[in-house]
Length: 605
Image (tube, rainbow, N blue to C red; front, side, top):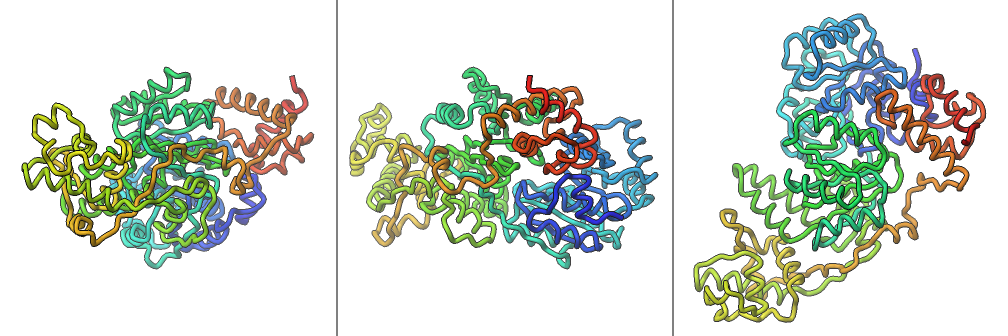
């Protein structure tokens, strides 16, 4: 029987484990249960794949990612791993073949959607086979505190009762201390060994900018910093997704939409293009991205405020899985806060309270004047006291100012509108009153006679929007859900009476950009700078890889990751033995692709 390190070298082509992997793998190989919290790109998959290859039997992987199972299986088969899946996309004959392979011991890994365990036939099938382990991927789906709750995951606690001697490993990239605790409780893993890796992704630069003209801001960001790069743009609504994708395409950036309103065939086609093509941008709702193992996503952009820090972290984590520099960019504005506060009013009290906590944490991350990475890691219960030097607030520290008087003017205007006229109005009208504008609406309602009319001429409209946004973020203003109008909160009176100061962040007119990152010390050490000759070789290898991937109908990264091609281009091996020393080239890929790679290297034309 091979040891874990032998499997790592022979199958996956790596000489050593990443930090934390070997301890987890050894524990599961020895039959222990494990709960693993590890960031996206940290190598979670190997933590169950290698034990499944070392232990006798088949590793059963529970995954919600039906649309990606084929790609996951293709990637494993390219490594020489005998893998299969069972889900609702298959026909009867295909399922029968996979079931026969499982019973005959001809599989190393079997992927199942959680709803398959509701089918008695699936349970009976598993009872007839020899199971090496159960891996529960995306384990945060079991937690109602998390951002992607799936009821089907609740039944996974039964695995231990049916197969008490089979080790279980649950894995997730996003878990606060509360979510961590709930995962352990719901999956009955309290007594398991809990492995918590650092959530830090130092290669990702976090940036949040004030929303002005978000489409144009996005276009400028892509053209100046990520021209030709693959990336994901997240929007909350299907309509926004369609409009942004069309806008980018009209401006010369290859982009496709992805949301639940598209038919299944279109979604599948757009996802396949993203996985198989270089430089494609997907504009999507949060329905896209979980489990996407595309290593070269260079940016993740948000044009709407995420509902939680967990969701933001999970989504931004889809960038830079290869360890190279990536950008997490967001345009954030007043309307985002108003919209999210309004959405929270829906649902029962427990739901509202939970969503309010999520939103408050997200707003605090957006409005902080300190290091965003420090705040992000603190949210996940990890101490990171030193500023990172690789987020916008570190690269261009924002100014702060005493916004108490400005806050009093806004709160007074809201109070006057209600107490004197029993009326509530939106942000635009409120700002018109503060600026003393004689609009038809102001004159119609007689608001030019209010004592607060014209008291805010010291600030411009954008500045007042920023003040109101920060008052909403600090809970000093709220949104009345029925009409999306502003109302006071229990905390407002302290400000109006002068009992509470209101520090505010001054919005930057020119946000930090990657040009500063290039000059700083926080660019990841894995970012390889190629010589002109090596760059030419790298591009030729990428062209060969794209052609081969297209012929085989698989994503390019299934052949080789960019990091592997960079190392080949740098080392220029001339024999198969030398090629075998390159990271990411296991025995199966060496046999399958080695001669072709050497041909590319020796024939530059």
